[in-house]
Image (cartoon, rainbow, N blue to C red):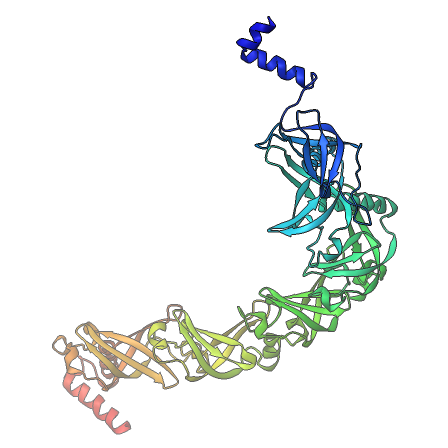
Length: 569
């Protein structure tokens, strides 16, 4: 059989012979094997790993001592990484560095599986982070994972052995990602938990202001931070924390609340002072007048500081008696000293309602006192509306003349047309409603009502002036100039004689006599008739100068009556 193998060897025969020569050892490329140092030549160690030929490894891969000499010697047993069984020179290709790396990866995989930290050192800087040596394996440390807060100078951390947490491992690609921040956060969390357990709500502690934000300040209580909110710094209004504190200040604070789940600590400074709202109802009774300072102005009003920590709101509706729909900033200014009256106090809601206008005289009350109902006032026409005239009076208040109170006899719209904005007018005070802030005025009342009393009566003869001629009659006016009356004489009442009942025989401005035939004071209506006056005069003449039975003609009678009338005139 041996002869057969020597003359016709097969692949299996070669495999059997190789195994024979290897002594039955199992070698595979890419694995770590043990070998023996059989010699040292210059900078290389000759290592026998049981193959046909030895392998060569540079001495620097094994390290050197303080004197720069190799730390290995002939006869030492070492572990190396078998890269190739044989190269072109017939030598085994082995590496101590790669063996150490494989050992490190195996060790790190165990650490990663157990979620344990690993010791390492930052050895270099790369794009986006740093390189960390984990005892033979190289890892990447992202810049965001160096510390809890951004680090400007990493110099003090370079080369220093310290713990890291393994975030990710990919052996085929040779990638390891580590974090120093995770270790610090875990240590900080443990420390924070321990410190929080030592704190109690209501406890007073000293701390140092570490940081100031728009909403408050962070105070270091000795390893743990608490938030001092801006509303808990003082009982009075604080617009920004920097008005009260500065970074580095040592302050006394009270622990207001501890959240065991989030471990957040709320602090307070004002809680160490007496609450100015205690007994606020007694200090600021409703109706009392006080002096305060404007601290803030909003669209809906202004805040007034009555004392440190106690502010009241003057609503925009309580700022002025006369200025309506005006922004509060046009009435008062910040830091201005003002007198206010307390309108309402609600200690439970920590609210005080104040009035600015109540501290001033009510202009409607002052007007009524200076100008009682029935008195005469003078003012400028501020505006004309569809229902009347607004007249400016004292203290920036207005009175209204209703269109029905402009003229006794002329219709309202026609009477209003006589006035325009800016005209000065006199009027009588008809009514003052202080509660509703209304003043009613009348222009026509200055002359008195011509319909009142016994100035005019039915059957009375009056002299009228023609103001308009129409096809149906004539429009006339009579009475005093300051209280004129108007009336319309129909065509049928223009004369007793039908031939003379022609309106065109009259002209505007003619003065004629007429008799009042009807007087309706409620409707303010007067009926006049020239015809009735002529009939009444004829009747009177007949009674005085004769009758149809005396033999005198009607012409004689009327002639005598006219002569007597003329002599009297």
